[in-house]
Length: 107
Image (cartoon, rainbow, N blue to C red; front, side):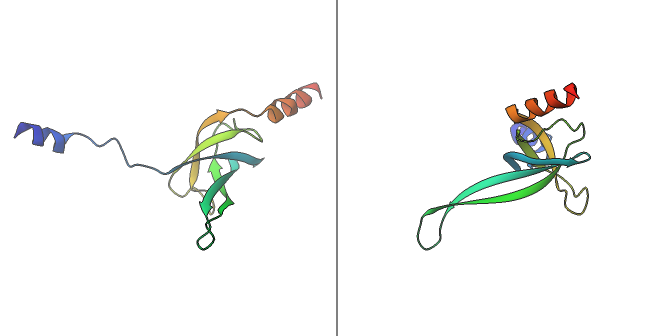
């Protein structure tokens, strides 16, 4: 009987938030990035695998993400009219972003 009470009293780890992995396509706004997520699903009638993309606006507090980076975003409360996601982590850095940083440092 104590085992069931412990299971009920165990604190929840938090709400399970939706996560997506995509590529950064724009960093022109302050503290906001645009992430393009590619989804692959079969056509309803013809069963061919179709590739669709969708853009999500995500909050990037430190403005650490750069153009071309592969990032993980997590669903959050509405932060603005379009922003409902926040940057969770940068999965892979883009070599394109490093070239741009070097060009800006030289100027």
